[in-house]
Length: 323
Image 1: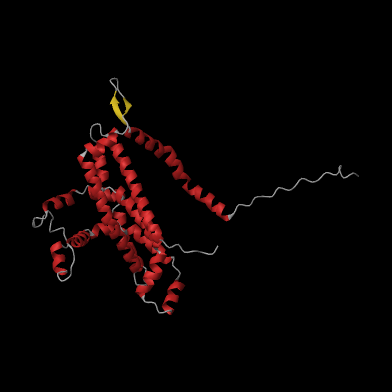
Image 2 (image 1 turned 135 degrees about the vertical axis):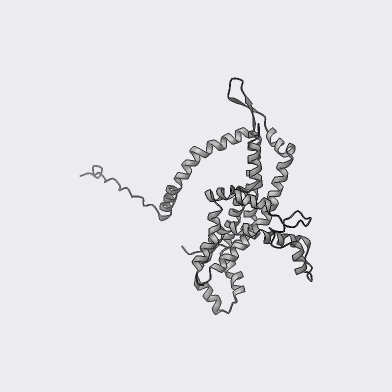
């Protein structure tokens, strides 16, 4: 028999076995698919229309309906140079954000460290600090904002007018109180204003720190107890352990909470810029100008997030794990 007449068996096809990472990736897409489909079908057309309206002017047709007339950046120029309140409201919101971020992140980290200790009733205390987050969202928040009795009480109860424009009933401390407390210390007026402002806003800070506190708690509980045992054997104090072990290990959570706080502050219902844009939208012919304001506001938020990520990423510690 010739060798040429011998037919070789076809090579066996190797069955591709998906790796564990690819399986996890497919599972991840399965869970996010409802959001992706909803974004493409519902939100993406709205975003495209919003961009289109910001560069056009709405013309009402005599027979009914409307037509869009391209005007370029005229709506953006109106928002920046013709509207005197938009830029002032925008800069005021940014200044408030610069003061709010450190207070919220530091307070939530402080409470997470305390609630991570072994103590009686730890779960109850965690629930208590998270209750304001539930009460300040959704339907309960709308009921609270429309509470006529509280509005009436807020309008009729006033304290002594000190000439500073502040109500002494709603203030916990004043700058005068702090100046007497730090009389022998060379503390500037700006620092006293900063401390007095946030002592008087402690209720608002607690309401906005619940989610960040849970994220910090998750990060603290992910640190291996053996690391703390090694520090204790080496004679490290609690202060040294916090700054050398705890703080670097939860630095990625600090970045995540800072970004979350920025987005939460810029999109909350009490945000002055959001309320002003909604007010302009409800005015006659204000739909196109409010669209331009919204996109400038959105780009500014992205810029602030990019700056925060660029600054904090240089100090973030990521623990290497052996694969």
